[in-house]
Image 1 (cartoon, rainbow, N blue to C red):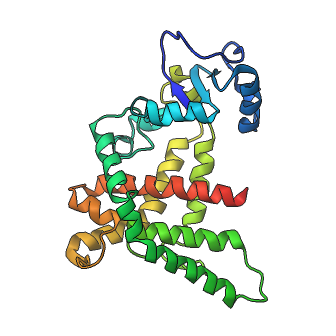
Image 2 (cartoon, rainbow, N blue to C red):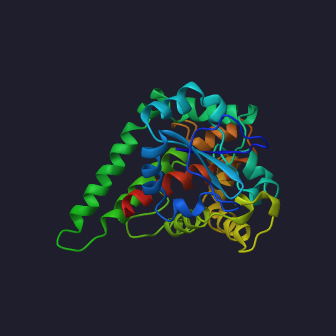
Image 3 (cartoon, helix red, strand yellow):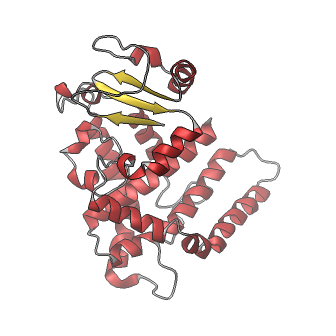
Length: 288
């Protein structure tokens, strides 16, 4: 668990390895960050501070510290670091989601309340038990139909996971087990965004560089968001707004956002962030 801090005067920071001038602890962390951070925690304790360029990073690595961060002080520490290249260039993406949010303001609280009450509450979870069971049974049926053939289990599980998510959010399957559907390319899109987001940008490590984008990071990320992700739910959103919603069935997440007065430009980034982190984490776990 890591937290980025923006401090002009750094006092009362947890212990940590000595940072080198300019580069900080970048080389000490290396490529296998989780392994190196675990080793550092054995020396410096479950709460430690590091420097990444000019940024301060606080790392918590024990259940007790995690509880303090996620429960005791969650309102103070629930914000997320926003890449500098996104902060000003894309204010809608910056303001209308829980991932790219650097402070817990009223908009953050409102969106969090929607997730808590409409997506993750016991009532909401129980209302979609049948749907989730059906998706799992469809997966089992497909695997049985391929008896004697080679199949890629992680791809089959990915389709099941994405259709559970898409039915919760949009009330439809967006891809089938053969790779067809409006979301046919979403796995590659998720992989590309995850790869881009995993690469630290110089402007994030050294804010003095401002909005310098040496590798067209912003252009690549926004192309995927605007030209690949957005097309998946753009037609669905317009169809719902034009009155094709089934008012007798359970409302999905997009229906809820529409009912609460969200505009199209507000809904798009919410959906993008809802899909990408979940699928990226799931895909990474399958790959590992």
